Image (cartoon, rainbow, N blue to C red; front, side, top):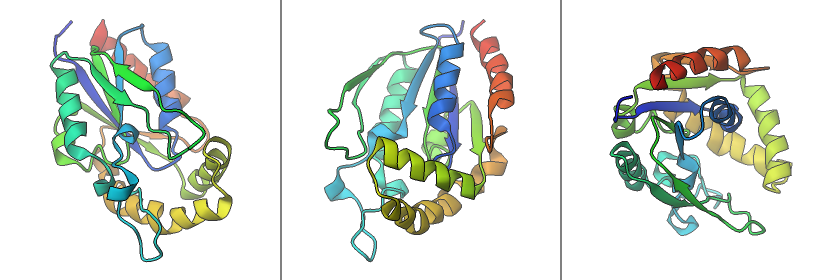
Length: 206
């Protein structure tokens, strides 16, 4: 086994299924063979976020992320060091953030909206995986998820979708789709694509 980890970037629009997809990868691979760094844990504090013309914070911009720390942590993990992060709770006041310790592993997954857009991150990736889902399906999934997990009313979700999520997706993520090594469609199920990817990843740790 190589001491240098195999680094996989997984990107896709909001509610494309990244979290579930990565959970299924983790569950299918041997224990301790996978480390996951999520872009979500690198959001800057609310007071440092940009606001739109109506005073709404726009969390869907590349500038909403602590880009330098994101890079520093992946480099530390690549060099064999563990990293410690505070869980991002999506501004849910009822949830106490946990401390997350990420240990080095043969395979490192970096996931998030901007992992292909940040050039310094993209050039570290050995494999780029893109989850592709129809816009109407993503919106319905996001409405359901944000209501159940984050307590957001539908009108707020739709406002963010129309004014933040969709414009950002079209500008900072969709252009990288055709440059991905693997495109996995998840309108109904990603299982076939997951099987193919797992076969590839197992070959990297065998």
